[in-house]
Image (cartoon, rainbow, N blue to C red):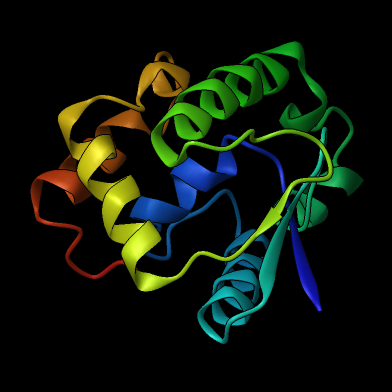
Length: 138
């Protein structure tokens, strides 16, 4: 199986500690994280992904807004440069322990945080990174 992720969710996963937009969103996010932890590969998609799924029934889901697509572009650029591979629609790879450590180090230093500017979760993510990613679920 494969976990479908939009590019900016590669950053969100790094600091996920079980908080979210709703109980349904958090329960779904936990399932996605569990699948990744069990070794499922990532498939990069443009637009809504497996994490966004519970939000798509809302009247105006934020995952369909232009700001989410802009975050995807910035994250794809920064994570792609970090990992030395294109992060684009259709790219497949795993999030193994070494890759997650590399991504977390870059996130902590701000190297891959351009996509996070203006995000409502940015302060929480900064606090999680500042704690050494304590209590993250992936």
